Image (cartoon, rainbow, N blue to C red; front, top):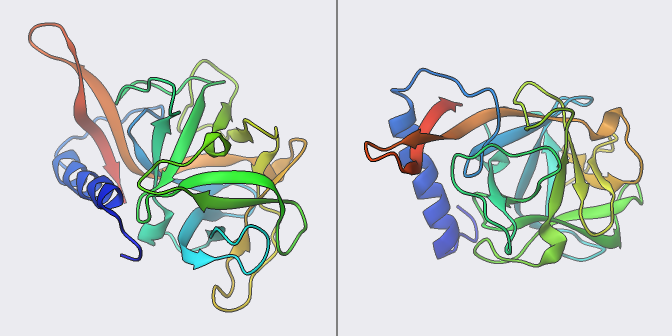
Length: 224
C-alpha cells in the first residue's frame, strides 16, 4: 500500500476486520451511515471515485482523484466521516444536508477541492489532501439528497462546503501514467454529471446493548 501512514493502516485494518465479521450478517441497510467504507459510482459515466499516490503535474500538485471503470480496485474505497468539528457516531444515518468528509482508505487523505484549475477540463480541481485523515476545512462536502437520509439506492450530489461546487465527472480521460482514468473535478450547477450512488462496501449499523446504550461497533452488511 503506497504512502500508508499509521492512521491509514488503522483504517484499512479496521475495514478488513469489519469485512470478516460482516460476512456472517445478512440483513441489509438501506441507507449510508457514519463509519461506513464505500465505493461511489458516478451514475452518468459508470466509473467509481478513485485515488492513488500519484500527484497532479499541474495545479496544486496534490494527490490526484480520478474515476475508474474497474469494480474490484481497493483504491476506490472511501471512509464516511464527520467533520473535524462535528459528531458523527459510527452507525448513525447520514442526513440529507449533512456535511461530511470522505477519507481515502489506502492513503489516509481526504477528498478535497479549491480554486486550482483541473488539468483536462479547466474546471475546479479535486484532489486528496491531508495526512492520517486530517486536512483542513476544504475537505468538507455536503450531501444533497431528496429525503431525510442518504439512501443507498438514491443518486446524490456532493457539494463542496467552501466553494459550493459539485463533485462531477464529464468524461475527459488521462494518458500515462493513469491511462484511461477519468478526470474528477467540481462544477457549479447541478447536472447528470454530478450524480453519485453508494455501491460496494461495509455499511455500519447502530445496535442496542443489553443495557439500552447505543453501540456503534457492529457492521451490518458487506459487499465487494
